[in-house]
Amino acid sequence: MSSLEIQKNTTETNQPKTLKIEKNFVLSNDYCRFIDVDEEFAYVSNFGGQIFILPLETFTKESSQIIKAHTNYCFQVYKYKDMLVSCSGDSTVKVTDPNTKKCIRTFEVKSKFVFETLIVENRIFCCGRDNFIMCWNYETGKVIKKINTEVNFLSMTKPNDYIFISDTNGHVNVLDIEKYKILHRFKVHENDVQYIINKNNILYTIGDHKEKNIKSWDCTTYKELKPFIGHEKGQVVIKTKWNYLFSAGYDHTIKIWDLDTHECLFSVLTGGNIWCLDLNHKYIVAGYEKSVLKINIEDQLQTNSNNDFLKLKESQFQTDLIIHEIPVHESILKIRTGKSGYEVKKVLEKSFTKEEAEIFLEWIYGKNLNLKKIEKIANAFQIENIQKKSMQQDLMNAYNDEDSKDFYIVVKDLENEEYNEEDEEEEEEEEEIPVHKFILIAKCGLFRNFFENVKEETKKVQDYSGKSIETLELFIKFLYTSQIELTADDDPQLIIEELEDAHAYYQLNKFSNLDNILKKLKRQFNLN
Image (cartoon, rainbow, N blue to C red; front, side):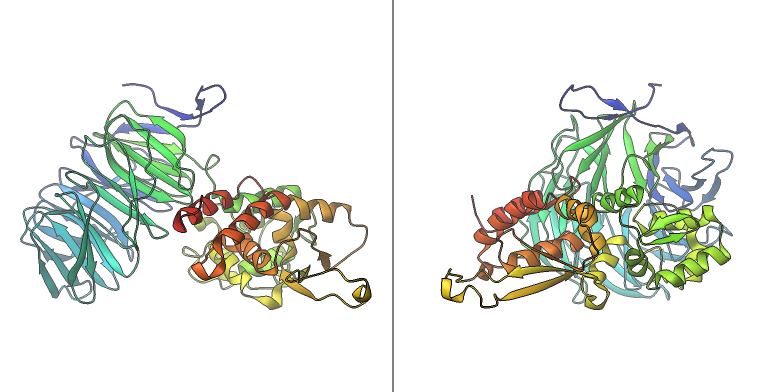
């Protein structure tokens, strides 16, 4: 078997950089078909109808548990409400307790093959090879609707208020889940649409083994966007996480792409066809024919938007609180926990060790880590649903929380401004834009330099960029949300030009994706 390598593409030397690989081993006598990964385990189904539960840290066949879930191919398995949901070529969908290994519910589909299921609001949808879509109540097992169609279906995803379902005729079908009707179909590939997935209202699709490129589509307009080009053969599976797309298939590679630039960042050489993969904050787990492999990505991939804050933590610049001898920024503690710096300090120093506090503070600044490690601390601060709590969402909430902002950018109203000596001594119209100081330090080199050189404590800074108040407000919102939203009424051309200037003027950090967002906006408004 070929040795495994993970490489980073480099434009200067064109020589890949080798990164850390964990291990691989033969799992069973049957090919792996689907993988779902949580914080502790990988759940692997195979063509023999089995489900393997693999502990990620030990990751050996000896440490795995086996559930005989089906009598035929097990096409899909995933964790839902602490249960395992699986579907099969034996015409069933099953819900299995992974602790007792007992099946607690069976949905009879009466289809030759059930390829995929999707759970939405306590309803379970399934698609397969017999020209219909089934929907049940997940808790009672009662059939809600059988939707007859003219095509066989392969894959499902839910980007908005509808379910998108791919078929064997090259189309994606848009299903209204309230009316249970197909509202629209649009062509994405020539033949089978093997797999679809969505992120941020963009649909990513792969075709059969003949189609090399990964395509992307606007989920609202159904228009094709820029493809991902780089595979030598077709793919079998695609996944998204953070700001990356992961793809694998028939060319014996796993590729990792930047979702904004479409650049292939890493390539994993596997020596064989990859049939399935999934990942968490630390590992990619992939099904390599009859084997599984594990790739450590913890130190290589972090969310781009969080890197600024992790760098800020490392620099210890402008920290204003010490916890267990660890310098921190009080305002970011309040944003992430909802507690004052004093409250956080008191709890961490009284009830937790320095090592435990350090791990928790890494999460505070946006590091992707095993949330089991901070569960006790999260409970102490009454942080609910920590599995779903993200840095990005907390920053969006912080943007809307005017009371917590501790700094102001003072902007002169430049609209229709004309110089007049007689008005020189009159007070100029100014507006103050509130912001969190740590956001400016983390995101913008200009403000970081300002705070490094300012001699006295200040709560305000005068802006001399010459940009309009509207543009600066959009720019500040982008620092929090990584989003820019415009309409035709906003004068898109002027604002985009001003934002391009602002990118350079404020010295946005390299992890910013503003350039790519502005390119998308130019395409949206047909601007050169």
